[in-house]
Image (cartoon, rainbow, N blue to C red; front, top):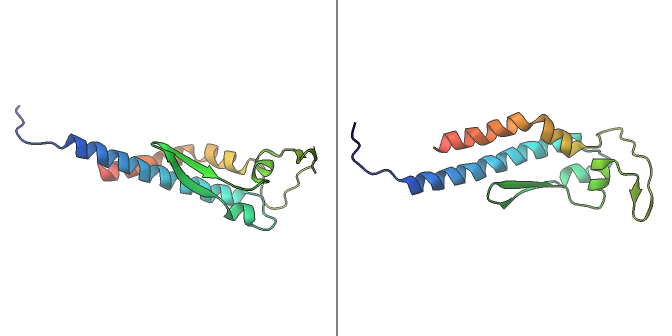
Length: 120
């Protein structure tokens, strides 16, 4: 069998990288949406403050800013140099981001794979 013609491997590689980035951002947005639903809500600021960004090729960061985001995520009792209150969540939970990432790892893979398949 003989192939005669031109195949644009550079274009394919570029399309693959672009599709990977798009898929990772979509997957990050998915995890952000789920984790925002799980985040403790007193005023709603924590759940609404999440941000998804590409930090380097192949890596996406989901960030909850604010001094209490880590406190709420990990249920830490110590803060600001003194003992804090035991966490009590009427609406939401500790480990809101960790739970969303672990529970949705298969879905995240599907989102990224779908993006790459759609482009290539």
